[in-house]
Length: 130
Image (tube, rainbow, N blue to C red):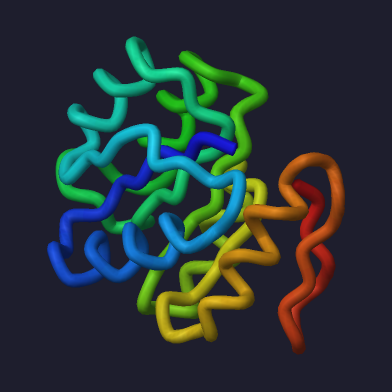
């Protein structure tokens, strides 16, 4: 699985990069720090999923989701945020799953694994189809 990582925080990108590189069958397809970088990358990089910081600079989350869907309508997008209260907004805007940045790494890995057509479950949160 090739994952495109979009987050403006250096430490978050580093931690996610380390986590992803430890997973068999997962490859980092690229990184983006702004919305425009992500959209440019989608045009040239073949990715199987996107890890999207919901507060990525350069666009609002819902507007960026619409732009992603316009370019890659079926690409699984997992929204990430340190603010759990934006979960509903992210899912309503079309994200396939939501993971809070404070969740254990296993939750993110589960969401990635299941975005091939399964379900992602977060305790206290409804199932979210990927």
